Length: 185
Image (cartoon, rainbow, N blue to C red; front, top):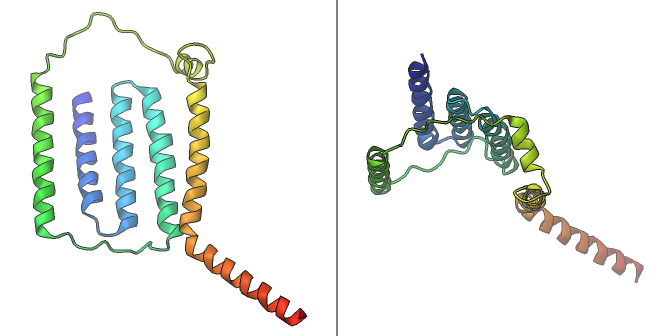
């Protein structure tokens, strides 16, 4: 049964990944990417990596896709159709993808993958305690740094998205201010 579920998830991932790359509508490409990320989370659930699957769904399937959709909506190009790619670029991309696939398949087929005798299951609570620990091996400081970085990125995205509007508003305010001083004089 697991083999059938794996092949179904793999087919979904491949189908929607190709659809995401080949779609000319940008919002559809983002939605197709969402289905790819959900399929990857399904693979994580299949191999019993529940924490990683939950992170995949919340961070990538939820947060990143919502960020992409907001970016598309902020620039008002929901129905934007991407330009057609030249045949030469398609051939180069296809050749590079085939070469990457060949290297990946070669690396997988030549690696011995030793079988381990012991299996230790890590609970989600243990992961949480380790991530939020102040002691050696804890990751509380990187989490705080990343949160500040994400706030800076969001502010930067807003400034970039509204860049022309902000400069227009400033020029209007300076014009209004100069007109008021002329009227007073």
